[in-house]
Amino acid sequence: MSLAVQNVYTIAKREMGGYFSSPVAYVFIVIFLLLAGFFTFKVSGFFAANEASLSPFFVWHCWLYLFLVPAVGMRLWSEERRLGTIELLLTMPVTGWQAILGKFLASWIFLGLALALTFPMIVTVNYLGDPDNGVILCSYVGSFLMAGAYLAVSCLTSAITRSQVVSFILSLVVCLFLVLVGWPPLNEMLSQWLSPAMVSAVSSISVMTHFAQFQRGIIDSSDIIFFLGLIFFCLFTTNVVIRSHRAG
Amino acid sequence: MIKIENLVKFFGPKKAVDDISFTVSKGEVLGFLGPNGAGKSTTMRMITGFIPPDSGRVQVGEFDMLNDPIRAKQLLGYLPENAPLYADMSVYGFLSFAAELRGLRGAARKKAVQEAIETCFLEPVAHQTVDTLSKGYKHRACFAQSIIHDPDYLILDEPTDGLDPNQKHEVRSLIRNMGRRKAIIFSTHILEEVLEVCTRAIIIDRGHIVANGSPNELKAMHPNFGSVRLNVYGVAEGDVRGKLNTLSQVERVEVIKSTSEQVKVRVYPKDKKDESFPTLVADLVTKSGWKFDELSMDKGRLDEVFRGITLPDTVKKSSKEGPVVTVNV
Image (tube, rainbow over all chains, first blue to last red; front, side, top):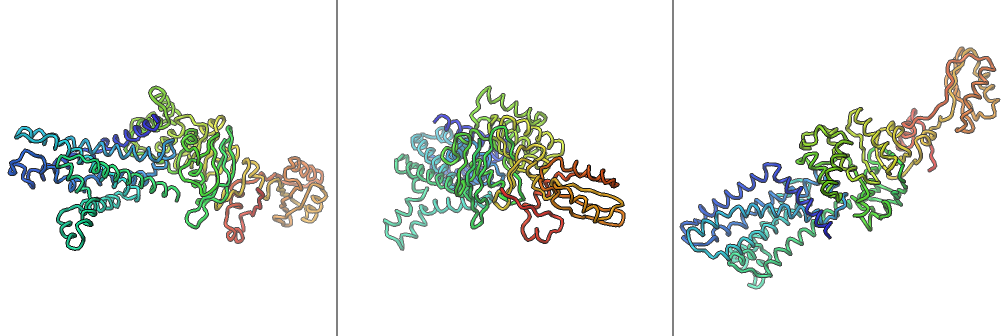
């Protein structure tokens, strides 16, 4: 068991080193922070709302991640396949799961780091007013889980193709679908043709619906299970895809 | 011991590897030869557990690659074709990573990395990023990763590809030295390499093993192996033929060139392995008082044997130079 953990750790460490040895990581973090600030203050009108809450900040996350997370995840496996290093990695005494988990965790921690760097938002809102910090913490947990779900989708699409661009686009389309099915305007449109039960069934597969619960300060096990289940499903499928590539 | 039994692999409808079996023991260096697309890399990928075979078994040491892949892989070192590397890492960082995955930690890891760097002459570039390296250094960095844990079994897919002649020489002597303790399988296109390094060679063609033996045994498959070339002057062709045929060891005499002053013949022995045959012919020539300027035994040429075995049948028929070899494996 400890050997498995060691292997996951070694692979994750290498992957993480890969992010920071190139400017990609820094560029990503700066863009993420700039966009998050821009949408919160300019588009949502944080100050004009005159409310001690970070909801104008979190409400953008499912849209921001749509572009930024696939950018982080697109190279995970497509790069390994393009360079041929997948042959090196998978002929080492590691299992496919250890490799997938190591790479996934490294990227997820990286996204967590970018998210953590938005802490000045918490400072600001606490300085200006008296927000419910429990809700803020809940929203951060939800945002992190949602980033993980997007990342798992990117991980899967990057295993499907050698091309990072194709991987990025595929991942964006799938994530967009996962957002849109829970997007209120679309749900209203659907309700013209479908029964309310069906509309809620459709929107229940949306990351938006589940993230909304966290934003209200509710940590429901069903939402956690949704995100973790989505992550598990995507990583499991990644393993199947990689296996089938190897089998020819 | 690496034991391969009845390996079969299909890519779509094409049978890339068709029922290949062989074993390699410690102390053996097995050269894996074959034209491009013969199934060399596919076979090696199946041995190292990268791709699963459609049927057949791979046993590494006492472990089965399909049922116990982790333990089987622990015993193996593998240099994939084209020597892939993580472009953004330093050579030292890459080797540390490989050592860690091989279960080496702390001081043992540092020592292993240092040794691999020394063995593969990587000191000048140890702290350079991989994508700044020349092809030769890249190749050696990947080679270093395959020997970092001092494995009992080494699988090397074209280890000298892309190296300059000096580096080729270094890598060959490295393989030869390591081959005394390890079981090594390496693939190559270069036939001299086989003669220089291998204790045994296997030639595969279109997924089949077409020859398996020591380099000398393979050379002996040449149709002219053991025959004697003779070039005499001032004797009639009929006389030469007649005299030579009096020797009981002679199977047949083939005239290559015959003019009024010169007769060039090739004499085939009944027993190809009879090493005294050239002496017998020489005795006859001196006894008969013929003038001659050539009398040599043909030792066979590996490249011609290789061509004879692996050329497609259609080319074989139309090719006038390539000898046609029939082989019993």
